[in-house]
Length: 102
Image (cartoon, rainbow, N blue to C red; front, side):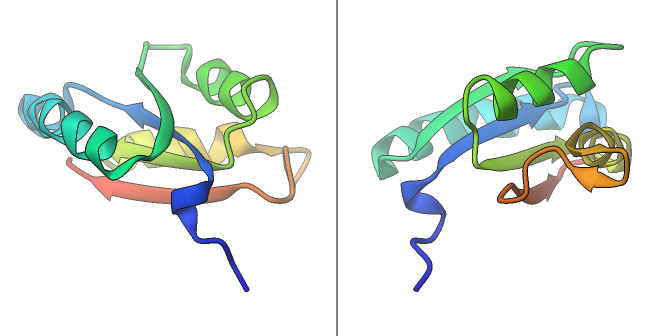
């Protein structure tokens, strides 16, 4: 039986300008809720030209098990591309989720 995501390390990649800046406000409001619920997570705002490295470091160096893209279709596209190398996932057990704010 699956443990669910509550027991996994989450990594949020957040595009703060998505949705005309509404993603940043959403994210600010989400942090206390994640803390109160007891999730283990880390996060970063996207940095132009660095999103691939940000995600790969989170997965390969910080052992993130779930990657959540918070943004629009461009953020999701970049996240998917960061998780794939040579037509394979960079880690076979990774879970991808998206929270659309674009």
